[in-house]
Length: 222
Length: 81
Image (cartoon, rainbow over all chains, first blue to last red; front, side, top):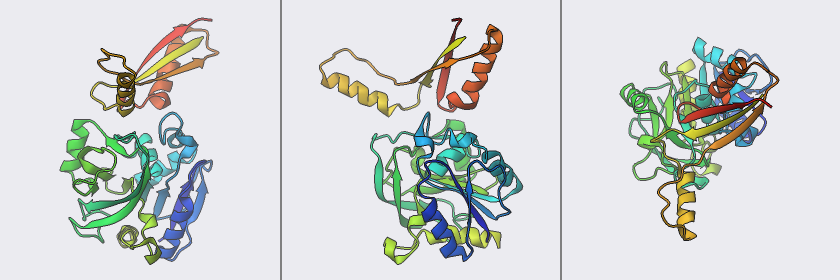
């Protein structure tokens, strides 16, 4: 599987993502600087975590209007898988590739710890190597992970099985609506999540539960 | 032309920062504070002299970048310098 990681000024998890992708796919991913206007021919585009543009204006707001983003939208439109992690999820929402917005954590604190994630839908390109209802540990590190959208969109996301991951009952770290940790676009090829599966991929991380997310995409594009 | 833009959270959208400010005002002994909502204030200087054109440009800027209309409202005042 060929992949690319888009790097913005203020991205800081791109190296973890590049490392994870190479480890799991066996192919060295491309790192694409945000000023580029075209993406290499790949099966997966990843927007990594970080604090692009210092979170100025709103998290992800400035990066979402960057030069590379029309190419990301075009790739998504062609069916290429697009994954946004943490700041990448915020950017996808700001760019309109996913609905809703990530707001300041309800507790106002930056949350950096492990959470329990529950697989809400295991029938997606990003979760098919998990089982529905499976609970796994994953780190989060964010100040703005509080997913919000209007009632109508929320009902659609739930009704169409587009909530891929939730924080397990009673462990919501940020006040996110319906404990949402990760959502899909309508077509199912764009996925955004706040937790960091790329930091849960080898025994040194304590567990390898994040691997299945990347292996799901690997299987989906095979 | 100068545009003064106020970006505020829509009604019903939780504002944890506003709540924290509200709590701090209470802790300082200010009584009678019924609620606090926090927003943003942005000033944009425009070369455009035509008021209608300036208003249209600012509206576009608000929709495309300055506000996220999923959660925010915006209000614009235009001042001729």
